[in-house]
Image 1: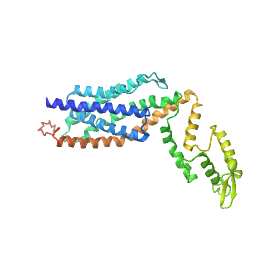
Image 2: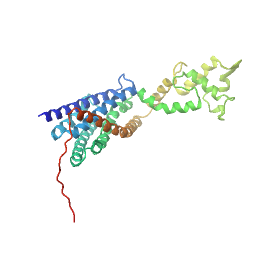
Image 3: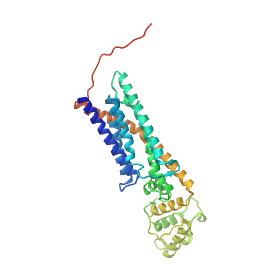
Image 4: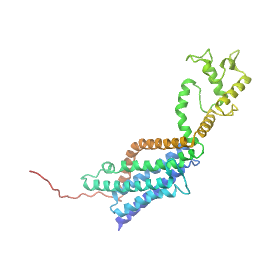
Length: 340
């Protein structure tokens, strides 16, 4: 009786952690007020706890029907936080249909992983957590990545195809490489600098006297020679010329500039403006590319994450063994040996 209670308790903890994980993931993909990276860190922590508890359940629970219930509740609780009120049919088709396929496949994979882990545990002479979990963990992580990517597509990328602006958090990730490149060209460059500051910095960098890279002024979006004046102590910028060149820069970008907005704001407006001009079919393709890229990122992240799950399982198992919740018994086993 005590054994059944322990198994039910472990199963209940797993299901609860699964609920918390899907809830935190749903909140993250719906872009709540939590900061972008802070939000994903919290999701990662809950995911680590959930997978650790799931791995322990697969290793320690002997009753197959209990594992079936745990797996079913852990997987299909996904629908409590995704797909409610959704009537999205975009790019890949119905969200509900893909969610159902993803959840069914994940449920089947969980059962296969449990059977493989259970089989490995029974045939092993020495109990080694890493060797046992490796029989089922990679497969489970792969199909979890597929389901999470589907959720990303329908709750994040698909919003873009429906005319919703590209989320600012996603934009911030994409402009990091661009910012690094610009810093190599303009040392004081920052996405937080205003457009007027950028025009001044850019013009000084590209002035004929300082043009070390051999770039011609005909390549610039404004007339540098007229832009810079001379004053004792160095170059100055005429406010009239600055305003004129800002207007020209504004016309080329197609965005009204005051000179006080940051480059980050300009870049965000520009990308969304250009993206809105794309055809719906092309926006659907972009959304699918986003989702596939997200799946690739997850698979890369899940490689070290898998070892982290195994390590954390070691720690929790050691604590459970120390407290007497679980124990390792030694038994004499009869073996059949074939020889000539």
